[in-house]
Amino acid sequence: MVSKHSFSDVSFDILNRIFMIASTLVVLYPIVYIISSSFSSANAIISGKVWLFPVEPNFNAYTAVFKNKQVLGGYMNSIIYTAGGTLISVVLTIAAAYPLSRKFLPGRKFFTAMFVFTMLFSGGLIPTYFVVRNMHLIDTRWAIVLPNALSIWNLMVTLTYFKTSLSEELFEAATLEGASDMRILTSIVLPLSQAIIAVIGLYYAIGLWNSYFDALIYLKSSDKFPLQIILRNILISNQADLSMGADMVAMARRQGMADVMKFALIVISSAPLLMVYPFVQKYFVKGVMLGSIKG
Amino acid sequence: MPDLHKKTRKLMLEHWQLYLLLLFPLINLIIFKYLPILGLQMAFKDFRVSKGMWDSPWVGLKHFQAFFTSPNFWAIIGNTVTISLYTIVAAFPFAILLAIGMNELSSARARKTVQFFTYAPYFISTVVLVSMMMQMFDPRIGILTRLLQLFGYRGDNVFGSATAFRHLYVWSGVWQQTGYNAIMYLAALTAINVELYDAAKVDGCSKWQRIWHVDLPGIQPTIIILLILNMGYIMSVGFEKVYLMQNPMNLENSEIIATYVYRMGLINSNFSFSTAVGFFNSLINLILMLSVNKAAQKVGETSLW
Image 1: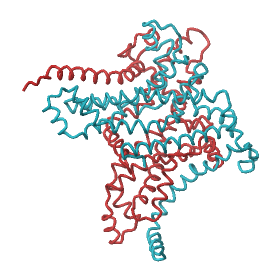
Image 2: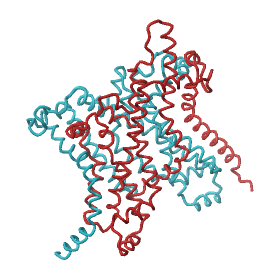
Image 3: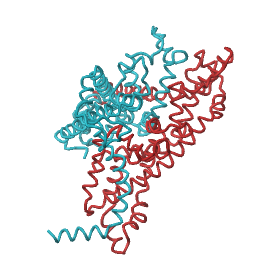
Image 4: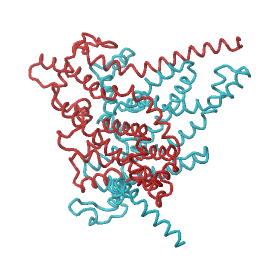
Protein backbone atom coordinates (compact mmCIF):
# COMPACT_ATOMS: atom_id res chain seq x y z
CA MET A 1 0.00 0.00 0.00
CA VAL A 2 1.35 3.37 -1.00
CA SER A 3 0.08 6.10 1.25
CA LYS A 4 -0.28 9.64 0.00
CA HIS A 5 2.48 10.56 2.40
CA SER A 6 5.02 8.09 1.15
CA PHE A 7 7.27 10.80 -0.30
CA SER A 8 7.14 12.89 2.84
CA ASP A 9 7.70 9.79 5.00
CA VAL A 10 10.68 8.66 2.97
CA SER A 11 12.22 12.11 3.14
CA PHE A 12 11.58 12.10 6.87
CA ASP A 13 13.37 8.79 7.31
CA ILE A 14 16.35 9.99 5.31
CA LEU A 15 16.58 13.26 7.22
CA ASN A 16 16.19 11.46 10.53
CA ARG A 17 18.95 9.02 9.71
CA ILE A 18 21.24 11.86 8.72
CA PHE A 19 20.39 13.60 11.98
CA MET A 20 21.10 10.45 14.02
CA ILE A 21 24.39 9.78 12.27
CA ALA A 22 25.42 13.41 12.67
CA SER A 23 24.58 13.38 16.38
CA THR A 24 26.60 10.23 16.91
CA LEU A 25 29.55 11.62 14.99
CA VAL A 26 29.51 14.91 16.88
CA VAL A 27 29.62 13.00 20.14
CA LEU A 28 32.30 10.61 18.93
CA TYR A 29 34.62 12.99 17.14
CA PRO A 30 36.31 14.65 20.16
CA ILE A 31 36.92 11.24 21.73
CA VAL A 32 38.43 9.82 18.54
CA TYR A 33 40.53 12.95 18.04
CA ILE A 34 41.97 12.77 21.56
CA ILE A 35 42.77 9.06 21.26
CA SER A 36 44.38 9.50 17.82
CA SER A 37 46.44 12.45 19.02
CA SER A 38 47.76 10.45 21.95
CA PHE A 39 49.26 7.91 19.54
CA SER A 40 50.71 10.50 17.17
CA SER A 41 54.16 12.04 17.04
CA ALA A 42 54.88 15.38 18.70
CA ASN A 43 55.72 16.90 15.33
CA ALA A 44 52.46 15.84 13.79
CA ILE A 45 50.55 17.47 16.63
CA ILE A 46 52.45 20.73 16.58
CA SER A 47 52.12 21.06 12.82
CA GLY A 48 48.42 20.24 13.00
CA LYS A 49 48.47 17.12 10.86
CA VAL A 50 46.31 15.06 13.19
CA TRP A 51 42.59 15.43 12.68
CA LEU A 52 41.16 11.91 12.58
CA PHE A 53 43.70 9.07 12.52
CA PRO A 54 47.05 8.91 14.35
CA VAL A 55 49.91 10.37 12.33
CA GLU A 56 53.32 8.67 12.65
CA PRO A 57 51.81 6.30 15.24
CA ASN A 58 53.87 5.44 18.33
CA PHE A 59 53.53 4.73 22.05
CA ASN A 60 56.14 7.24 23.25
CA ALA A 61 53.67 9.38 25.14
CA TYR A 62 52.33 6.38 27.03
CA THR A 63 55.78 5.13 27.99
CA ALA A 64 56.61 8.62 29.21
CA VAL A 65 53.37 8.99 31.17
CA PHE A 66 53.79 5.61 32.83
CA LYS A 67 57.28 6.63 33.96
CA ASN A 68 55.84 9.65 35.73
CA LYS A 69 55.70 8.87 39.47
CA GLN A 70 52.97 11.42 40.14
CA VAL A 71 50.66 9.85 37.61
CA LEU A 72 51.31 6.32 38.87
CA GLY A 73 50.78 7.41 42.46
CA GLY A 74 47.56 9.15 41.51
CA TYR A 75 46.39 6.06 39.70
CA MET A 76 47.04 3.90 42.75
CA ASN A 77 45.30 6.38 45.04
CA SER A 78 42.26 6.55 42.77
CA ILE A 79 42.03 2.77 42.78
CA ILE A 80 42.16 2.76 46.59
CA TYR A 81 39.54 5.51 46.92
CA THR A 82 37.27 3.93 44.35
CA ALA A 83 37.46 0.40 45.77
CA GLY A 84 37.30 1.39 49.43
CA GLY A 85 34.77 4.16 48.96
CA THR A 86 32.45 1.99 46.89
CA LEU A 87 32.53 -0.73 49.52
CA ILE A 88 31.72 1.72 52.33
CA SER A 89 29.02 3.45 50.30
CA VAL A 90 27.28 0.27 49.18
CA VAL A 91 27.28 -1.18 52.71
CA LEU A 92 25.88 2.03 54.20
CA THR A 93 23.26 2.31 51.46
CA ILE A 94 22.00 -1.22 52.03
CA ALA A 95 22.15 -0.75 55.79
CA ALA A 96 19.81 2.22 55.36
CA ALA A 97 17.60 0.93 52.56
CA TYR A 98 16.81 -2.48 54.06
CA PRO A 99 15.35 -1.31 57.42
CA LEU A 100 13.58 1.61 55.72
CA SER A 101 11.95 -0.79 53.26
CA ARG A 102 10.25 -2.83 56.04
CA LYS A 103 6.82 -1.27 56.05
CA PHE A 104 5.91 -2.08 59.65
CA LEU A 105 9.03 -0.60 61.24
CA PRO A 106 8.16 2.11 63.79
CA GLY A 107 9.87 5.40 62.93
CA ARG A 108 10.43 4.40 59.31
CA LYS A 109 8.83 7.56 57.91
CA PHE A 110 10.77 9.82 60.26
CA PHE A 111 14.11 8.26 59.38
CA THR A 112 13.35 8.33 55.66
CA ALA A 113 12.49 12.02 55.98
CA MET A 114 15.80 12.59 57.75
CA PHE A 115 17.68 11.17 54.77
CA VAL A 116 15.58 12.98 52.15
CA PHE A 117 15.85 16.34 53.92
CA THR A 118 19.61 16.42 53.30
CA MET A 119 18.86 16.50 49.58
CA LEU A 120 16.94 19.74 50.07
CA PHE A 121 19.05 21.58 52.56
CA SER A 122 22.68 21.43 53.57
CA GLY A 123 25.08 23.27 55.83
CA GLY A 124 27.20 24.15 52.84
CA LEU A 125 30.91 24.16 52.15
CA ILE A 126 32.44 25.93 55.16
CA PRO A 127 30.47 24.25 57.99
CA THR A 128 31.07 20.85 56.38
CA TYR A 129 34.76 21.63 56.06
CA PHE A 130 34.94 22.45 59.78
CA VAL A 131 33.14 19.26 60.76
CA VAL A 132 35.68 17.26 58.76
CA ARG A 133 38.45 19.31 60.36
CA ASN A 134 37.14 18.82 63.87
CA MET A 135 36.96 15.09 63.24
CA HIS A 136 40.70 15.31 62.40
CA LEU A 137 40.09 13.93 58.95
CA ILE A 138 41.84 16.70 56.99
CA ASP A 139 44.59 15.26 54.82
CA THR A 140 43.55 11.68 55.56
CA ARG A 141 42.17 9.18 53.08
CA TRP A 142 38.97 8.96 55.15
CA ALA A 143 38.08 12.51 54.08
CA ILE A 144 37.58 11.22 50.54
CA VAL A 145 35.37 8.24 51.35
CA LEU A 146 33.35 9.21 54.45
CA PRO A 147 31.72 12.68 54.16
CA ASN A 148 29.82 11.88 50.96
CA ALA A 149 29.57 8.14 51.44
CA LEU A 150 25.80 8.19 51.14
CA SER A 151 24.14 9.31 47.96
CA ILE A 152 20.49 9.87 48.81
CA TRP A 153 19.61 9.32 45.17
CA ASN A 154 21.20 5.85 45.23
CA LEU A 155 19.50 5.17 48.55
CA MET A 156 16.12 6.04 47.05
CA VAL A 157 16.75 3.82 44.02
CA THR A 158 17.66 0.90 46.30
CA LEU A 159 14.76 1.58 48.63
CA THR A 160 12.31 1.65 45.72
CA TYR A 161 13.71 -1.59 44.43
CA PHE A 162 13.44 -3.32 47.81
CA LYS A 163 9.88 -2.08 48.30
CA THR A 164 8.62 -3.06 44.89
CA SER A 165 10.52 -6.27 44.18
CA LEU A 166 10.63 -8.01 47.54
CA SER A 167 7.33 -9.01 49.02
CA GLU A 168 6.57 -8.75 52.69
CA GLU A 169 5.06 -12.27 52.54
CA LEU A 170 8.48 -13.63 51.72
CA PHE A 171 9.86 -11.99 54.84
CA GLU A 172 6.97 -13.21 56.97
CA ALA A 173 7.49 -16.76 55.83
CA ALA A 174 11.17 -16.50 56.72
CA THR A 175 10.36 -14.97 60.10
CA LEU A 176 7.96 -17.84 60.84
CA GLU A 177 10.77 -20.24 60.15
CA GLY A 178 12.80 -18.41 62.76
CA ALA A 179 15.06 -16.33 60.58
CA SER A 180 16.30 -13.09 62.16
CA ASP A 181 16.22 -9.78 60.28
CA MET A 182 19.96 -10.05 59.64
CA ARG A 183 19.48 -13.54 58.33
CA ILE A 184 16.72 -12.36 56.01
CA LEU A 185 19.05 -9.66 54.70
CA THR A 186 21.93 -12.01 53.95
CA SER A 187 20.02 -14.99 52.64
CA ILE A 188 17.00 -13.43 50.94
CA VAL A 189 17.41 -9.72 50.26
CA LEU A 190 21.00 -9.62 49.05
CA PRO A 191 20.81 -12.61 46.69
CA LEU A 192 17.63 -11.21 45.14
CA SER A 193 19.10 -7.74 44.71
CA GLN A 194 22.40 -8.45 43.01
CA ALA A 195 21.47 -6.42 39.93
CA ILE A 196 20.53 -3.28 41.85
CA ILE A 197 23.60 -3.59 44.08
CA ALA A 198 25.78 -3.83 41.00
CA VAL A 199 24.14 -0.73 39.51
CA ILE A 200 24.51 1.47 42.59
CA GLY A 201 28.01 0.10 43.16
CA LEU A 202 28.95 1.21 39.66
CA TYR A 203 27.37 4.61 40.19
CA TYR A 204 29.37 5.07 43.37
CA ALA A 205 32.56 3.78 41.75
CA ILE A 206 32.28 6.11 38.77
CA GLY A 207 31.46 9.03 41.05
CA LEU A 208 34.52 8.32 43.18
CA TRP A 209 36.81 7.78 40.22
CA ASN A 210 35.68 11.02 38.56
CA SER A 211 35.42 13.36 41.55
CA TYR A 212 38.06 15.88 42.52
CA PHE A 213 36.29 18.37 44.77
CA ASP A 214 36.70 16.58 48.11
CA ALA A 215 40.35 15.89 47.33
CA LEU A 216 40.83 19.56 46.40
CA ILE A 217 39.52 20.84 49.73
CA TYR A 218 40.50 18.07 52.17
CA LEU A 219 43.87 16.75 50.96
CA LYS A 220 47.16 18.59 51.38
CA SER A 221 49.94 16.08 50.76
CA SER A 222 50.49 15.17 47.15
CA ASP A 223 51.17 11.51 47.88
CA LYS A 224 47.47 11.12 48.69
CA PHE A 225 46.16 12.94 45.60
CA PRO A 226 43.79 10.98 43.37
CA LEU A 227 44.35 10.88 39.63
CA GLN A 228 41.82 13.64 38.88
CA ILE A 229 43.78 16.15 40.97
CA ILE A 230 47.05 15.16 39.29
CA LEU A 231 45.32 15.52 35.93
CA ARG A 232 44.01 18.93 36.87
CA ASN A 233 47.43 20.11 38.01
CA ILE A 234 49.12 18.93 34.84
CA LEU A 235 46.44 19.62 32.24
CA ILE A 236 44.50 22.59 33.49
CA SER A 237 46.64 24.54 35.92
CA ASN A 238 49.90 23.68 34.11
CA GLN A 239 51.51 23.35 37.53
CA ALA A 240 53.56 20.26 36.97
CA ASP A 241 56.53 20.40 34.68
CA LEU A 242 56.25 17.92 31.93
CA SER A 243 58.66 20.17 30.05
CA MET A 244 61.55 21.40 32.15
CA GLY A 245 64.74 22.05 30.32
CA ALA A 246 67.49 24.54 29.64
CA ASP A 247 68.42 24.70 25.98
CA MET A 248 65.85 25.79 23.43
CA VAL A 249 65.96 22.75 21.15
CA ALA A 250 65.51 20.31 23.99
CA MET A 251 62.78 22.48 25.40
CA ALA A 252 60.89 22.59 22.13
CA ARG A 253 61.19 18.84 21.87
CA ARG A 254 59.95 18.42 25.42
CA GLN A 255 57.15 20.88 24.85
CA GLY A 256 56.06 18.78 21.91
CA MET A 257 56.30 15.69 24.02
CA ALA A 258 54.32 17.41 26.77
CA ASP A 259 51.53 18.10 24.29
CA VAL A 260 51.23 14.44 23.32
CA MET A 261 51.55 13.34 26.93
CA LYS A 262 48.53 15.44 27.80
CA PHE A 263 46.46 13.54 25.26
CA ALA A 264 47.79 10.24 26.59
CA LEU A 265 46.96 11.28 30.15
CA ILE A 266 43.37 12.01 29.19
CA VAL A 267 43.07 8.59 27.58
CA ILE A 268 44.74 6.71 30.43
CA SER A 269 42.58 8.31 33.09
CA SER A 270 39.39 7.51 31.23
CA ALA A 271 40.46 4.04 30.09
CA PRO A 272 38.90 2.13 33.01
CA LEU A 273 35.52 3.74 32.33
CA LEU A 274 35.78 3.23 28.58
CA MET A 275 36.55 -0.44 29.15
CA VAL A 276 33.63 -1.21 31.46
CA TYR A 277 31.12 1.03 29.69
CA PRO A 278 30.14 -1.42 26.93
CA PHE A 279 29.27 -4.07 29.49
CA VAL A 280 27.33 -1.93 31.93
CA GLN A 281 25.63 0.60 29.65
CA LYS A 282 22.27 -1.18 29.56
CA TYR A 283 22.15 -1.40 33.35
CA PHE A 284 22.76 2.32 33.59
CA VAL A 285 19.84 3.03 31.30
CA LYS A 286 17.69 0.90 33.61
CA GLY A 287 19.11 2.71 36.62
CA VAL A 288 18.03 6.09 35.26
CA MET A 289 14.53 4.69 34.85
CA LEU A 290 14.47 3.18 38.34
CA GLY A 291 15.44 6.53 39.79
CA SER A 292 12.50 8.18 38.12
CA ILE A 293 10.01 5.88 39.82
CA LYS A 294 8.60 7.50 42.89
CA GLY A 295 9.89 5.87 46.06
CA MET B 1 -3.50 4.11 73.22
CA PRO B 2 -1.27 2.34 75.78
CA ASP B 3 -2.02 -0.84 73.90
CA LEU B 4 -0.64 0.70 70.75
CA HIS B 5 2.49 1.84 72.54
CA LYS B 6 3.00 -1.64 73.88
CA LYS B 7 2.62 -3.06 70.42
CA THR B 8 5.07 -0.55 69.00
CA ARG B 9 7.59 -1.26 71.72
CA LYS B 10 7.26 -4.98 71.13
CA LEU B 11 7.83 -4.47 67.40
CA MET B 12 10.87 -2.32 68.08
CA LEU B 13 12.37 -4.87 70.45
CA GLU B 14 11.69 -7.72 68.06
CA HIS B 15 13.41 -5.90 65.25
CA TRP B 16 16.38 -4.43 67.12
CA GLN B 17 18.67 -5.73 64.40
CA LEU B 18 17.04 -3.42 61.88
CA TYR B 19 17.69 -0.41 64.11
CA LEU B 20 21.26 -1.50 64.70
CA LEU B 21 21.75 -1.70 60.95
CA LEU B 22 20.18 1.71 60.44
CA LEU B 23 22.47 3.18 63.08
CA PHE B 24 25.57 3.15 60.85
CA PRO B 25 24.21 5.21 57.94
CA LEU B 26 22.39 7.40 60.44
CA ILE B 27 25.60 8.26 62.29
CA ASN B 28 27.27 9.10 58.98
CA LEU B 29 24.30 11.29 58.08
CA ILE B 30 24.23 13.09 61.43
CA ILE B 31 27.95 13.79 61.45
CA PHE B 32 28.45 14.89 57.88
CA LYS B 33 25.05 16.38 57.00
CA TYR B 34 23.35 17.50 60.22
CA LEU B 35 26.33 18.78 62.22
CA PRO B 36 27.18 21.20 59.38
CA ILE B 37 23.65 22.56 59.66
CA LEU B 38 24.41 23.40 63.29
CA GLY B 39 27.58 25.02 62.00
CA LEU B 40 25.47 27.50 60.05
CA GLN B 41 25.47 29.65 63.20
CA MET B 42 28.89 30.79 61.97
CA ALA B 43 27.00 32.94 59.47
CA PHE B 44 25.64 35.01 62.38
CA LYS B 45 28.94 35.21 64.27
CA ASP B 46 32.42 36.60 63.80
CA PHE B 47 34.05 33.21 63.73
CA ARG B 48 37.58 32.98 65.07
CA VAL B 49 39.35 29.67 64.77
CA SER B 50 41.08 30.34 68.10
CA LYS B 51 37.77 30.83 69.92
CA GLY B 52 35.90 28.03 68.25
CA MET B 53 32.43 28.05 66.80
CA TRP B 54 30.44 28.26 70.03
CA ASP B 55 32.43 31.04 71.74
CA SER B 56 32.77 33.42 68.81
CA PRO B 57 30.69 36.61 69.25
CA TRP B 58 27.27 37.02 67.64
CA VAL B 59 27.04 39.74 65.02
CA GLY B 60 23.50 39.31 63.73
CA LEU B 61 23.02 39.80 60.01
CA LYS B 62 26.27 41.68 59.43
CA HIS B 63 27.67 39.16 56.93
CA PHE B 64 24.42 38.92 55.00
CA GLN B 65 24.28 42.71 54.72
CA ALA B 66 27.89 42.75 53.59
CA PHE B 67 27.05 40.25 50.86
CA PHE B 68 23.86 41.98 49.71
CA THR B 69 25.57 45.35 49.49
CA SER B 70 28.82 44.07 47.99
CA PRO B 71 29.52 45.26 44.45
CA ASN B 72 29.80 41.61 43.36
CA PHE B 73 26.34 40.59 44.54
CA TRP B 74 24.31 41.12 41.38
CA ALA B 75 27.12 39.98 39.11
CA ILE B 76 27.44 36.65 40.93
CA ILE B 77 23.69 36.03 41.09
CA GLY B 78 23.42 37.11 37.46
CA ASN B 79 26.18 34.77 36.31
CA THR B 80 24.67 31.84 38.21
CA VAL B 81 21.15 32.35 36.84
CA THR B 82 22.38 33.09 33.31
CA ILE B 83 24.39 29.87 33.15
CA SER B 84 21.40 27.87 34.44
CA LEU B 85 18.86 29.37 32.07
CA TYR B 86 21.21 29.16 29.08
CA THR B 87 21.80 25.48 29.91
CA ILE B 88 18.08 24.76 30.11
CA VAL B 89 17.31 26.57 26.85
CA ALA B 90 20.14 24.81 25.01
CA ALA B 91 19.82 21.35 26.52
CA PHE B 92 16.07 20.72 26.40
CA PRO B 93 15.42 20.90 22.65
CA PHE B 94 18.39 18.68 21.84
CA ALA B 95 17.41 15.97 24.29
CA ILE B 96 13.85 15.94 22.97
CA LEU B 97 14.99 15.92 19.33
CA LEU B 98 17.44 13.10 19.99
CA ALA B 99 14.78 11.04 21.75
CA ILE B 100 12.23 11.54 18.97
CA GLY B 101 14.85 10.75 16.34
CA MET B 102 15.87 7.54 18.09
CA ASN B 103 12.23 6.57 18.56
CA GLU B 104 11.62 6.93 14.82
CA LEU B 105 14.50 4.64 13.85
CA SER B 106 12.91 1.46 12.56
CA SER B 107 15.77 -0.81 13.56
CA ALA B 108 16.20 -1.54 17.25
CA ARG B 109 19.89 -2.12 16.68
CA ALA B 110 20.37 1.33 15.19
CA ARG B 111 18.51 2.83 18.13
CA LYS B 112 20.71 1.01 20.62
CA THR B 113 23.86 2.03 18.76
CA VAL B 114 22.92 5.70 18.78
CA GLN B 115 22.03 5.49 22.46
CA PHE B 116 25.25 3.65 23.27
CA PHE B 117 27.45 6.36 21.77
CA THR B 118 25.47 9.45 22.75
CA TYR B 119 25.18 8.30 26.38
CA ALA B 120 28.92 7.57 26.73
CA PRO B 121 30.24 11.13 27.38
CA TYR B 122 28.07 11.29 30.50
CA PHE B 123 30.65 9.12 32.26
CA ILE B 124 33.65 11.26 31.40
CA SER B 125 34.96 13.14 34.42
CA THR B 126 34.69 16.91 34.64
CA VAL B 127 38.48 17.22 34.76
CA VAL B 128 38.81 15.19 31.57
CA LEU B 129 36.00 17.09 29.85
CA VAL B 130 37.60 20.45 30.59
CA SER B 131 41.03 19.08 29.64
CA MET B 132 39.64 17.87 26.32
CA MET B 133 38.18 21.30 25.67
CA MET B 134 41.45 23.00 26.56
CA GLN B 135 43.41 20.71 24.26
CA MET B 136 41.00 21.31 21.40
CA PHE B 137 40.94 25.07 21.94
CA ASP B 138 44.65 25.35 22.71
CA PRO B 139 45.96 28.56 21.09
CA ARG B 140 48.97 26.71 19.63
CA ILE B 141 47.86 23.20 18.73
CA GLY B 142 44.06 23.14 19.25
CA ILE B 143 42.18 21.69 16.33
CA LEU B 144 39.09 23.79 17.03
CA THR B 145 41.21 26.95 17.30
CA ARG B 146 42.49 26.14 13.81
CA LEU B 147 38.95 25.61 12.60
CA LEU B 148 37.87 28.94 14.07
CA GLN B 149 40.83 30.61 12.38
CA LEU B 150 39.66 29.23 9.05
CA PHE B 151 36.45 31.16 9.62
CA GLY B 152 38.36 34.32 10.40
CA TYR B 153 38.76 34.10 14.18
CA ARG B 154 41.73 36.26 15.18
CA GLY B 155 41.65 36.15 18.98
CA ASP B 156 44.35 33.98 20.48
CA ASN B 157 43.09 32.10 23.52
CA VAL B 158 39.47 31.03 23.42
CA PHE B 159 39.65 30.00 27.08
CA GLY B 160 40.79 33.48 28.07
CA SER B 161 37.72 35.11 26.60
CA ALA B 162 34.95 36.13 28.99
CA THR B 163 32.29 36.01 26.28
CA ALA B 164 33.30 32.51 25.19
CA PHE B 165 33.05 31.12 28.72
CA ARG B 166 29.27 30.70 28.80
CA HIS B 167 29.12 29.16 25.36
CA LEU B 168 31.92 26.72 26.15
CA TYR B 169 30.32 25.79 29.46
CA VAL B 170 26.84 25.26 28.08
CA TRP B 171 27.65 23.54 24.79
CA SER B 172 30.20 21.18 26.33
CA GLY B 173 27.38 20.30 28.74
CA VAL B 174 25.04 19.66 25.84
CA TRP B 175 27.71 17.46 24.26
CA GLN B 176 28.14 15.51 27.48
CA GLN B 177 24.56 15.16 28.71
CA THR B 178 22.14 15.10 25.79
CA GLY B 179 22.34 11.30 25.51
CA TYR B 180 21.61 10.95 29.20
CA ASN B 181 18.78 13.50 29.17
CA ALA B 182 17.19 11.78 26.17
CA ILE B 183 16.66 8.54 28.11
CA MET B 184 13.68 9.93 30.02
CA TYR B 185 11.98 11.20 26.87
CA LEU B 186 12.67 7.99 25.03
CA ALA B 187 11.00 6.07 27.86
CA ALA B 188 8.01 8.41 27.72
CA LEU B 189 7.82 7.93 23.95
CA THR B 190 7.85 4.16 24.16
CA ALA B 191 5.05 4.36 26.72
CA ILE B 192 2.72 6.11 24.24
CA ASN B 193 -0.23 3.92 23.38
CA VAL B 194 0.28 2.10 20.07
CA GLU B 195 -3.41 2.63 19.23
CA LEU B 196 -2.74 6.36 18.93
CA TYR B 197 -0.18 5.67 16.21
CA ASP B 198 -2.54 3.30 14.43
CA ALA B 199 -5.32 5.87 14.60
CA ALA B 200 -2.97 8.50 13.19
CA LYS B 201 -2.07 6.14 10.35
CA VAL B 202 -5.73 5.48 9.55
CA ASP B 203 -6.30 9.22 9.49
CA GLY B 204 -3.55 9.47 6.90
CA CYS B 205 -1.03 11.35 9.02
CA SER B 206 2.51 11.64 7.72
CA LYS B 207 5.41 10.96 10.07
CA TRP B 208 5.91 14.68 10.55
CA GLN B 209 2.28 15.07 11.54
CA ARG B 210 2.46 12.06 13.83
CA ILE B 211 5.39 13.57 15.72
CA TRP B 212 3.50 16.83 16.02
CA HIS B 213 0.12 15.36 17.00
CA VAL B 214 1.02 12.16 18.85
CA ASP B 215 4.67 12.20 20.04
CA LEU B 216 4.93 15.74 21.33
CA PRO B 217 1.59 15.74 23.19
CA GLY B 218 2.53 12.30 24.53
CA ILE B 219 5.77 13.48 26.11
CA GLN B 220 4.47 16.92 27.02
CA PRO B 221 3.91 16.00 30.68
CA THR B 222 7.49 14.70 30.93
CA ILE B 223 8.83 17.86 29.30
CA ILE B 224 6.87 20.11 31.63
CA ILE B 225 7.79 18.19 34.77
CA LEU B 226 11.49 18.14 33.87
CA LEU B 227 11.41 21.85 32.98
CA ILE B 228 9.78 22.70 36.29
CA LEU B 229 12.19 20.54 38.27
CA ASN B 230 15.13 22.10 36.45
CA MET B 231 13.92 25.52 37.52
CA GLY B 232 14.47 24.32 41.07
CA TYR B 233 18.19 24.16 40.38
CA ILE B 234 18.73 27.55 38.71
CA MET B 235 20.57 28.89 41.74
CA SER B 236 22.68 25.79 42.28
CA VAL B 237 25.16 25.63 39.41
CA GLY B 238 27.78 23.04 40.36
CA PHE B 239 31.23 24.09 41.47
CA GLU B 240 33.40 21.57 39.68
CA LYS B 241 33.21 22.47 36.02
CA VAL B 242 33.00 26.24 36.46
CA TYR B 243 36.00 26.23 38.79
CA LEU B 244 38.11 24.28 36.33
CA MET B 245 37.21 26.61 33.48
CA GLN B 246 37.76 29.73 35.57
CA ASN B 247 40.72 32.06 34.99
CA PRO B 248 41.42 35.74 35.72
CA MET B 249 40.41 36.69 32.18
CA ASN B 250 36.90 35.22 32.29
CA LEU B 251 36.14 35.82 35.96
CA GLU B 252 33.59 38.56 35.24
CA ASN B 253 31.34 35.92 33.65
CA SER B 254 32.49 32.80 35.46
CA GLU B 255 32.24 33.79 39.12
CA ILE B 256 29.17 31.97 40.45
CA ILE B 257 27.88 31.51 44.00
CA ALA B 258 29.65 28.17 44.52
CA THR B 259 33.07 29.40 43.39
CA TYR B 260 32.62 32.65 45.33
CA VAL B 261 31.88 30.70 48.53
CA TYR B 262 35.00 28.61 47.94
CA ARG B 263 37.21 31.60 47.22
CA MET B 264 35.98 33.74 50.11
CA GLY B 265 35.94 30.85 52.59
CA LEU B 266 38.73 28.41 51.94
CA ILE B 267 41.14 30.68 50.05
CA ASN B 268 40.62 34.02 51.82
CA SER B 269 39.57 32.51 55.18
CA ASN B 270 36.50 34.75 55.53
CA PHE B 271 34.73 31.81 57.13
CA SER B 272 31.70 33.61 58.53
CA PHE B 273 31.07 35.69 55.42
CA SER B 274 31.42 32.65 53.19
CA THR B 275 29.07 30.62 55.41
CA ALA B 276 26.50 33.43 55.17
CA VAL B 277 26.69 33.42 51.36
CA GLY B 278 26.32 29.62 51.34
CA PHE B 279 23.41 29.77 53.79
CA PHE B 280 21.63 32.38 51.68
CA ASN B 281 22.11 30.13 48.66
CA SER B 282 20.84 27.01 50.49
CA LEU B 283 17.74 28.88 51.63
CA ILE B 284 16.96 30.08 48.11
CA ASN B 285 17.48 26.55 46.81
CA LEU B 286 15.17 25.12 49.45
CA ILE B 287 12.45 27.63 48.61
CA LEU B 288 12.88 26.99 44.89
CA MET B 289 12.77 23.21 45.32
CA LEU B 290 9.65 23.34 47.50
CA SER B 291 7.90 25.64 45.03
CA VAL B 292 8.77 23.65 41.94
CA ASN B 293 7.72 20.46 43.67
CA LYS B 294 4.34 22.08 44.43
CA ALA B 295 4.10 23.19 40.83
CA ALA B 296 5.00 19.74 39.54
CA GLN B 297 2.37 18.18 41.79
CA LYS B 298 -0.25 20.53 40.40
CA VAL B 299 0.71 19.94 36.81
CA GLY B 300 1.34 16.27 36.65
CA GLU B 301 0.53 14.57 39.94
CA THR B 302 4.22 13.76 40.12
CA SER B 303 6.53 14.94 42.80
CA LEU B 304 10.05 14.37 43.95
CA TRP B 305 8.96 12.86 47.23
